[in-house]
Structure formats: C-alpha cells, structure tokens
Length: 346
Image (cartoon, rainbow, N blue to C red):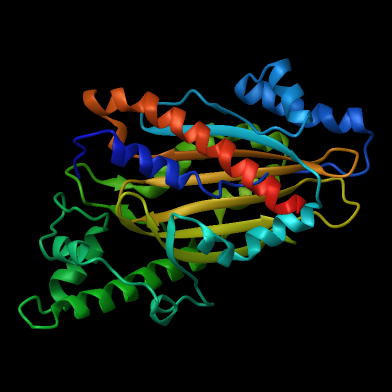
C-alpha cells in the first residue's frame, strides 16, 4: 500500500478515532473531590493546563496528542456531560448508532459462536478480491495471515466464472473462524502482507504497556482486556462486531467492545473499551479506553484515550505527514466528545 499524498492516511486515522473507548466514574463524592480525580488523570497523562481544565468544567471538550513512538498515534480527551452514565453505556451497546456515522457503511454483530452467516450483509470490494487473487506471503495489498492466504490459494477456483463469489464466501468463513478463535482463546492474527511479518499480539503488548496508567483506575479491567478470555471479570459485557468503514476506501474491520458498568452506588469506576482485532487495511492494532467519572452534581466526566498502531507512518515522507495526522485526530476527538455530549443531554 502506498501513499502519494497525506490525504488518505490522515483520513484513515481520523476515521478510526470514531467511538474511542470510555472512562471510569466515582459515585457519591463531594463536587470538589469528584473533580480532583479527572483533573489529576488529565494532568498526569497529557499535561492539560489549568485553563484546559476550567474549560472542561464549563462543559467544553478538550483533547491533546500524547507522545508516542513513530508507529503509534494516541489522543486523550475529555468532556463534562449532564446525563447519566447508564445512557452512555446504552449508547455504546446499541451498535446501530454507528450507522448514523459518515464513516460506517455496513455493520453487524457476531453471534455466539461467530459464524459466516453473521457476515451475510458484508459486501467486499472487487479490488480487494482482485488483490487477494495475487497475494502471497510478504506481498499482499490486504492484511492477511499466511494461513488465510494459503486457504485462498487452495480453496478458490480462480479460473472459474464465479471466482469472486467463491472468494467472498471464503473470506466470510475465515473472518468468522478468526473471530471464534479470538472469543475462545484470545487468538490474534499474524499479518504476512509485508516482507517483515507482524504479530498483532505484539502490537497490543506495546499498546497495553503504554496504557499502564489505567492500572491505577481499574487494574482488573486492564488485565481483563490484556488476557481475554482467560481472565474472568464479573459484570463485564462483551460485543464482537464487524464493520465496513469508509476510510478513504472501504475497510473491513472486526472490533471487540467490552463494557464494565458499575452497579448503582458502587465506588469503582465503569469503563468501556473498543479493541480493534482486525483491519484489512491501514491499521495493525487499536485500543480505545473511556472512563466516566461522576462530577458530584448532575452528570459525569467522560475521559477517552485512543491509541492506534500502524506501519504506514514509518519512512521519511510519511513521518512528515505525522504532524497532520496528529492534529486531525485531536480535532476528531473533540468532535466526537462534543457530539456525544449533545446526544446524551437531549
């Protein structure tokens, strides 16, 4: 995959910023004490200033880019919302809300266990199927594992008149099988589309290492995400869904949505995570974490941190695009926080 202008890469990262994860909430504390937790978190993770935090208390969204290595883009943001945290969790549970986005073209939930029939509404682009026809390990325009490349080479009659239909049907079966393996064992793909192989699990290890500040908020939730599904977490909800997103080109993705709401009156936070476990293009791994902290009055603070890893930002020319990508992602984060506030305060 090549980029002759910054536009596609910038748009890709901005699009992935949609529906970043959620943050924890404290219940039953005085207003000043309730403000202390989100303020301290934002100061320590991203260096927000007193002026930024004053704007936050007035209900304005704030966002900043975090320092990362060149293969990662990370943005942290927050907004104060006059609504219930239950409404926020319900908004995430209903993935049909994503259909209202300009980005999401098609979307659907996987069943238990996932099956190819769950993906019957997913339509693949002809150019992706044409690309897969030519794929081999180390040289492929679609992110695929070597095992899946071998399946395409072996199981599709590429000389038959209906080869595209065969390839599409097989891709649905392979996506469902990979989703089932993730649900059962936490198995993540190995991408063999480039000369240097990439293990998605390794990318998530780097993301989680960079997200260790969440251990002070909810170590059990972070451990649950890292070691899913071998670690049990009472009260956690899981939704696995697929989507086709317009990211300068239609991109098929699979996402694990984990929700950890706090029972009424509980002192622990409630959290939401969006964990991208597959993308056909652009992205190697992505994690959004959101925390909702009671403001001690009539609402809560929504704090979000979104991290995306990709090999598409390496190289001299692409490194010059990085500043543009970061700025646009920060602006996108502010927009998402603002639209969530508007939707929940109606």
